[in-house]
Length: 144
Image 1 (tube, rainbow, N blue to C red):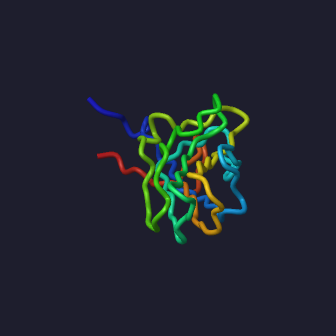
Image 2 (cartoon, rainbow, N blue to C red; image 1 turned 30 degrees about the horizontal axis):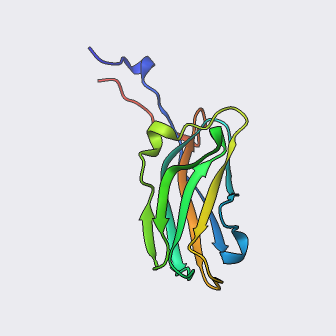
């Protein structure tokens, strides 16, 4: 059993990386802000939220990462504390939820402030993905 040489997919593609830097002025409390557009047929492999400057609301600050498919504001990362710096990987397995439908979609950032008058907060949203049917090279197969 197994694939014969004619049935093996020899197409390969490099992983694409999209990122968006942001700071407090780019966000609005309780609003899903468009951050990264992904084309139709994309599959998110993994993603990260990298906070380089801690947010400073009075009691708490959280960021969630979702997309516009069914307005799911925390599809990839559920409310994560951003009052300290650091890197946080997406909390859900993107391959099971990260198939982008026809027309593409926007990946969104949603900030929830704990009140007061925050003045600080910076970070980067980074997503690694592939696009179905895309080929950047091929890998020859030698039948055994």
